[in-house]
Image 1 (tube, rainbow, N blue to C red):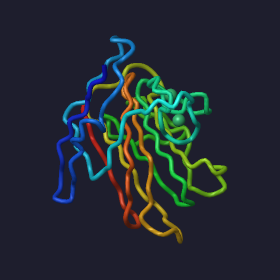
Image 2 (tube, rainbow, N blue to C red):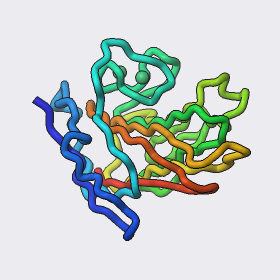
Image 3 (cartoon, rainbow, N blue to C red):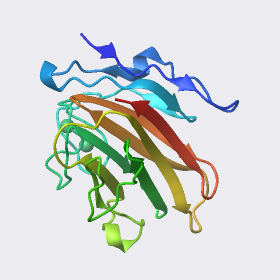
Image 4 (cartoon, helix red, strand yellow):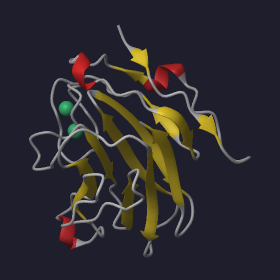
Length: 197
Ligand SMILES: [Ca+2]
Ligand SMILES: [Ca+2]
């Protein structure tokens, strides 16, 4: 049996309903001890899809939990934690994943925020990513700090690529994964969602 955890409240006239019951179906937590319930979810326009669709095999660098085990892109060299936020894209553009925790500090490479968030790669969509355009932020240690979290996807540099650019974004919160296709229609566009733990 599956159940939904995210019940978004929308902001802005341009926002569209995320209230797609089938889109936010999530696997039940495997361990009740790591159950985390996001509250007061507020999101920009996003096309939500199923939390996972079992394909039997975990594929790397697609920001999807392909095997529905509650972990995104495991075995692919990405770090993970009780919280994990991943974006992946195919176009040669610079996309930034911007995640901040209750302390307000944005996760960056090489320095863990006071909330314990750490980014393990900053991909500019060039040869630096070896064709694997992905950014990953995770809780490096301990239990998630209580408070407000913000997760944003920003089209930092579209270069000469035709718009819009589509980005796959997934979040692991405890043993649950939610996912969305984020459509960035213009240069410097940013889409985000927030929730409280
Ligand atoms: Ca997985
Ligand atoms: Ca995957």
